[in-house]
Length: 136
Image (cartoon, rainbow, N blue to C red; front, side, top):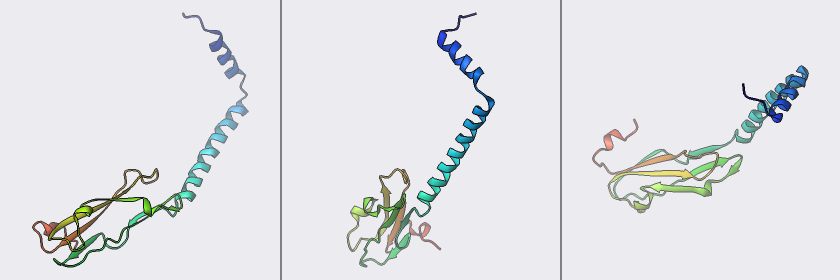
């Protein structure tokens, strides 16, 4: 059998000396602290949102103008909508987009919303494949 080090002996001795009430109090504080953390987290984030402004899907006639409505992002009670990043087909759309199906993808570099993304579909005219895209 291996010989125990002085540190191991001291640790075992300290554990044996711990009063049961100390262990119960430590466990109680751990539970109360965890519950308080959950409650505080819920209070800080209860009004948080990451939503598209306007419709999720938009149908336009060819030649009709398009203006992107944007998103609203609230993270930990603070409006960070200006940090939204538009991607997908947004850059390829003009004010009067050509016939086709476009997807505008919104993301934000934020701890709260991490990998979350929202997608708006814009259908211009009657392009091939639009039948499966139209809400109805």
